[in-house]
Image 1 (tube, rainbow, N blue to C red):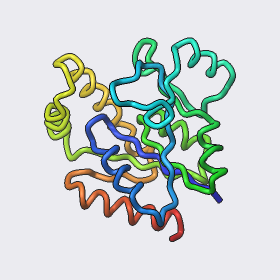
Image 2 (image 1 turned 30 degrees about the vertical axis):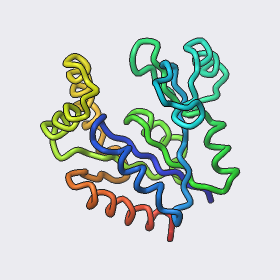
Image 3 (image 1 turned 60 degrees about the vertical axis):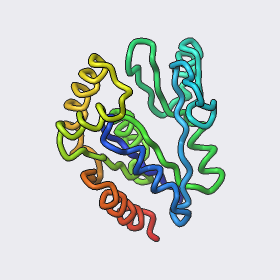
Image 4 (image 1 turned 135 degrees about the vertical axis):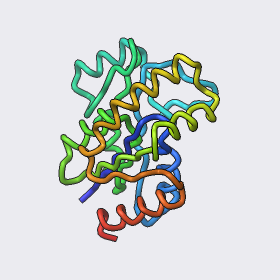
Length: 188
């Protein structure tokens, strides 16, 4: 049976870094699920690799056509979602799907695929550490930092709704813990 692993976390908790490390392990037979979004493409991003870039109108049309497993309007006219066709594409290749999605999206996927899915919540050691990581990225304005930290507070309240919580204090320990959880879930 094909399976899926869902990684969710507040922005800056390190989920994308952990996902990249997990994808290096061929034993897990994983393929990354590319999300769709309605935001403009950034320099260096590739359609179909980083995201499926859709216009706001196209995204809304696909919502109306029931083409998404989950979607969310994260900010005004900034939609993100997971296309059903992406899951089918990966499963047809005989691979397990990996998601790097926000907390609400992760729980929505888990709700649709209860048996096939493992939902992992990557938790920062503290809000203070999360703030430090976001500042060190040097990608946030003062306003966007405040918005992300406020959202993180809300997202942390959902942690116990996930199958497993991994505290990312030391990256190598968090990656090893994740690998052990996946070995068990994938029966390897």
